[in-house]
Amino acid sequence: MDIMLLRTFQLQVARQCRYLLMSATEVNTALKEEGTPERVFYALQNLLNAGANISKALWGQSGKLAQTRKPLRDSIDVADDSPLQQVTMRNNFEHFDERLDRWWAESKNKNHCDMAIGQKDNFILGGDAIDMFRVFDPTTTNLTFWGQEFNLQTLVTEVQRILPKLEAEANKPHWG
Picture 1: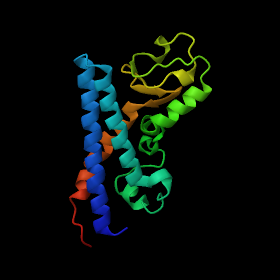
Picture 2 (picture 1 turned 60 degrees about the vertical axis):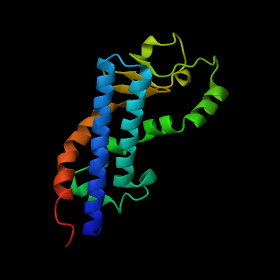
Picture 3 (picture 1 turned 30 degrees about the vertical axis):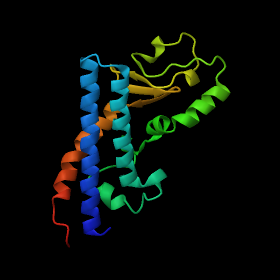
Picture 4 (picture 1 turned 90 degrees about the vertical axis):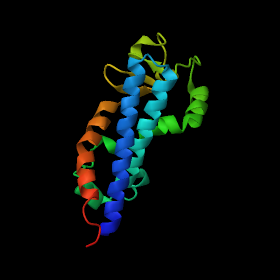
């Protein structure tokens, strides 16, 4: 990868990392101020979007550029098992229309629990996983959608780890 392209990627990924951390702060603020679930999930969606943007930069869409982007990952010590690679939860949020169509076709009881804050087992007694859309547990930082869980703290921790490296690398000379 050309050094100028590498530095430009590093700069852009650093920006997305800052956006992700800003979103995490907004989640915490909304929870402390007893903000509406809409405010909390607005911040969660932004956090997931920033994470997915980082993933696309590091591996390409659906991992299609993994080999090409390896120098970028190597420059900031990101392993292929990084939580940044996971975009399934973001896809659940982004492709809500497809999820609603599938829910309508597959749900037995047509229960619909969405934008719930608390332990996932506290909503819809006896409900099926497909009836549980976005559920966020602030005590574990797990985000659940249709029984799929993703721990947001692992994402935040990874971004906190790589951001100083990104900023240091992006500030190096871009000519070589």
